[in-house]
Every structure is written in C-alpha cells, then in structure tokens.
Image 1 (cartoon, rainbow, N blue to C red):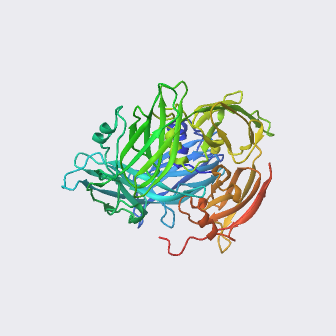
Image 2 (cartoon, rainbow, N blue to C red; image 1 turned 120 degrees about the vertical axis):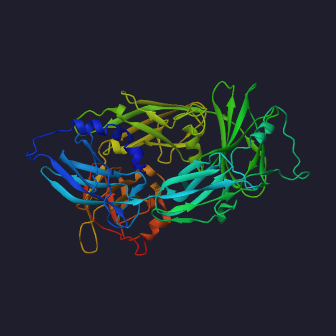
Image 3 (cartoon, one colour; image 1 turned 180 degrees about the vertical axis):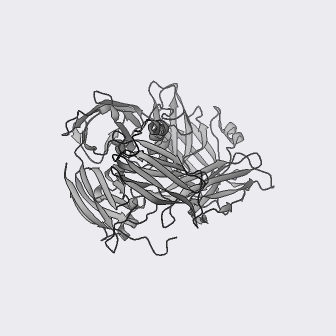
Length: 575
C-alpha cells in the first residue's frame, strides 16, 4: 500500500502519547517482564550531543503495547524504562533538525523489537541540521511584492506517474520576504506565484458577454509563475542542491509579460442556473485563477502561465450538485473554444462484509474507505474534493469527501460524487494490518479496474478479509549479516502497479527482521534497500534498475512465508 507521511499516520497516536506514558505499567524495577531502552542523540556531522531532543516510542500494536516519551539531557542521553515488550516505532524530533540514516538521507524513524527483560542500550541516533530556503520577491521597479506564494518542489512518483511534490511553501510578507525552513538535504526546485490580480478578476466578473478579438489586440501583460533562477518555462528551471544546515538565498524579480487567456463556455446548464469556473495548478495544488460565467454561458480566465492545470465548472442554484472538470496543458498559446458540460454528481452506497477466521467478531466501524479517482487529473480532483482552498477540510463546494466511514452494520455512502472513474480502498491499512479488500463489485459485477460514477446511484458490495498473506524474514548484506533500518517493499505484479493499496512496506528492526502483513493474494517481488529516496519504488524506471535483485513471492490467502532477502546496497556516490 501507499505509505502516508509519518506525521499523518501517527497524529492520533501522538495526541495520546503523554497520557499513555503516564498510564503505562510502573512495575517494580526488579521485574523481568518489561524492557529498557537507552541511547544518545548526536548532531551530524560530528558527534556533538544534542539536548532537548524529543524521543517518541510508539507501539506498533496499540492494543498490546503502549507509548513512551523522553527528552535528551545535556549529554544527549535518554533512557526509557518499564516498556511493555513488543514491536515499536522510534521517532526523534528537534526543531531545526531532522533524523538521518547512515547515508545521510532523511529517516522516517526506526523499528525496534523489545522482549521481556531486555535492556537495549547504546543506541545512537543522528540528527542533521535542516536546510532553509529564503529570499525576497520584488517587481520590476524593485518594490516588494507581498502575498506572493513561494513553493519548494521535488519530483516524485506515485503508482508509476511522475508528480511534483510540494515539500514547503510560504507567502511573502509586506517586505516581500519569505523563509521556508525544515528541508532535508537534496535537490529541489523553487517557484514563485504572484498574488491574484484582483483587478483582472473584477474585470472578468459580471454578466456582460465576453468579447475578444485576439488578432486585433495584444495579450494583456501580467506577472506569471516564475521558476528559479528566473524562467517562466518549467523545463528551464534550475534545481538547487541543499546540504545540511544550508541557508540558500533564492531571490526573484518579477516583470510583467504577455499572459495567456482561456476562453470557453459552460453548456447544457439547467434553466436559471449559473456556474463558477476555477483553474487549479497540478504543480502546486493551488487555485490560481477563476471567473464567473456570463449570461451567454461564456467565460474568460486571464493571466494564465504555461503549465498543467485542471479547470472546474461548478453549478450554482441547481437542484442537485453538478460539476465539470477537464485537464489542460497550456504551452505558449491561448486556449479557445473550451466547452465544459457539467453533470450531476452521483451517490455511491453499499455494504462491507468482513471475513475473519480468528475468532473475534470484527468491528466494521473501525474502517474508513477511500475513494480514489483513476483519471490522469486525480491529484487536482482529489485536492478539490477534499476542499483545498474552498469550503474547509473534508468537503468541497459539492459537499463531497473522498473518505467514508463504515457503520457498525457495514453500510457506507458517498454523496454528490463528481462524475468519473473510481476505485476504492481501505484508507489506513496500518490500523488493521492483516486486512485487505478481497473483492469490489459494482452493480453485481466485480472488476479490478474500478467503476464509473455518473448521475444516479452506484451500489457497491465489498468484502474485506483478515486473512491477508504474511511475508516475514531477515534482510542480510553481502557478508550474510543482518541489516537494521532497511526498507522492505512487496511490489505487486505489473497489472497492479498503478494500485497503491497493493504495495506493502516494512522497515527491519535492530536484528534485520521484517514482517509484511495483509498481502492480498497474488504475485509479488520483494525488495530490500539499504537506502531509498522516498517512495521511488513507484517509479517504473527505478524498478527496472533493480531487476534480478528481488525475490519472487506468490501469496495465497492466509499463507505465511519466511524469506531471506539480500539487501540492495546504496550507490557508492550517494552522500
């Protein structure tokens, strides 16, 4: 499955950390039923002790374990006693620093297995000073440009598709200054998007029909999205290389230049209704511009920079929510004759059946389902659906949320779903690691490729099983020694590689051991990487470079396999 950021996965758990630590058993110190953990946090490079670092020890199974915290002292040391035996995730936080692995890549914590009476000591955790990008944005006269949006981006892959991931963002203050801290060492791109041109928005609003004759007048001048070191062409953007503790200056001086315009119309509207048009960047997940529809159905969006977008038309005053959306790739010419035909949103309802052979009756209300658009503009639609920049978290102007909570009787429902092609998955499989979605049937027919939603109601019958396959074992190096903190991933066969929920990921503990749980039946290749950049295993080209270095596994429902994986070493030139 796709692995979400650590902060999101554990946000609920961390909220209860202090309480859990206080309520955790405080047995007699002489007892041998609990474990002890001690170690030191140091700065990298070097080995200077780092005080006031927060240590968080989070039980992998919240029903069996507990959570603990500690602060490092002036000597960088910490000690946690009376730990319930089990498997834990260890995280270290300190403002201005980030945990790194031995190859100086950002670490997402580490996994520890603690047994009764064990004292794991002399653990050394290295933190590296985070990098900062800061600078100033001015106009052609050298005057500050407040409220400009600065974004720090990096290219990443999700389920085989290249994406621009925003890792930091900030708006300029009244002096045109900005500062984006907390960046890991690596290569990034920096962009600046000027503040909205409210004058242009006012001019394009209203009920007068749009009139234009591009051949008779030049395109209006406007400030446009600009990439460091000063180009409006993303292909010409220069990457900046950040090292630990860097304070990188990225200044921008923006000048107005001929901008692009989108002319179009909204068609097939219900009588008496109107529509709002919004343009969203795929690069930045920001609504960059918008327009109101004129009485004749036409609209005009000005001041558009070249780039990849999704355009939305949402209908007001309609009996049911309606929306149209279309992907746009804008190069160097205006867009003419665009037609948007909104359609009524549909509803999805159904029932989840849970299969378990483990005795305890499963509770469906523990599960959230995630609706995933399979269209090319999934990123934009997902952000729109979750309300980014509109009506608040969890809903959009259509009132649509991609998450659905399963009720105690197994029923669930999504309302006002925009037309499109979708798939469904368990939202956070880490909360129920043995479970997988066994079958999805829409209208009585099962199809791994997903289902269409239009007007009306779509009925889903889902079956979840607690009998996911388990692959466990040890990751070893070329000397047959176990390797700790290695990333192990079960990569599904080619036809499922665009389905993030088919992947499973684990990190080896201090003994090199790992467990992959809840594998849906099918064929996999298991890989173990000494160090990997983020979720590179979604990148087909990266996987091609690893051919022959994984181990094939056929997983059947309820099966358990024990495997030994040879770790793929980090490149020698890796910092």
